[in-house]
Image 1: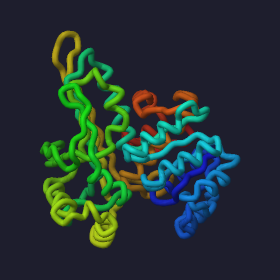
Image 2: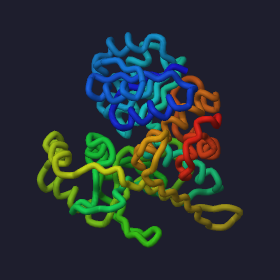
Image 3: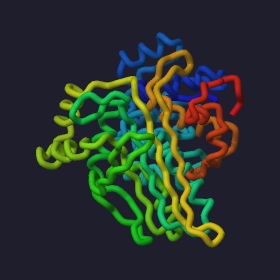
Length: 365
């Protein structure tokens, strides 16, 4: 299978390395940043300088490929998906942006190829795992989904390090959030709904952020009393972000906020990804609760040191693509994350990374 990856940043680079390592994919990377492409070319991955904002140029570059994996910022998603449709290739992305997903769904109407957005950690894995748990109940009272990508060793006032896209981080802190309350889908405000919990002796906070539910509100509509998604951070983070975004009004000046964060908050490869899902409901006439947790730490994959967010985000994309290649997923139209069976995902060679297993590329999906 010939795969074009749009975006040669951290996650795009990781996806390219993982797929290439299997020998089952021919991979090429597209980006307008020559420096980013040089890093992939040095690893032996074919590259092409393409401005993904130019739909015509991207569409021409996609000739001869089977799949486009979009690892670019959320605001380019619709343009890139339209180019994929024009080129007649399957489309997968990592976007958390709700409006972009709705637009991509419209593009997928009557499409002969697959359009599958939100293939990362959250949205992505968190949704398919929560859906699998919910299906074990005859009546669902509530579904709570919590995900955090956190430094193992927080040292600044935010208790946070940059581990993924700054654009995506700010966007999820600023956009309205879908939720189900009292059986009705509604919008709630980001940074609200603050709660505290502990896991393995560590204290955390969680609050509303946008996009993590993917399409789950629609899928579970009429079946669940309450459903929500919150990002997990160390205590105190939410209050400082609220000060920056609301009191200093930087929600209206995202470029300044992005510049500040990049200048002052370092990145780290020593991170941990926390996944925490609880589902409460009826089974066999009893009210019961199931809990699903994962902690994924930074480690070495494909001979490269990788952060936990690299492993989980790129691993989820590669697992879904592997399942698609094996024809274990629909082969045309819009595909939701919750159409991915959890057991099949966790049994996949890339999905096993969520259990801390090494990537064995010789094992077929």
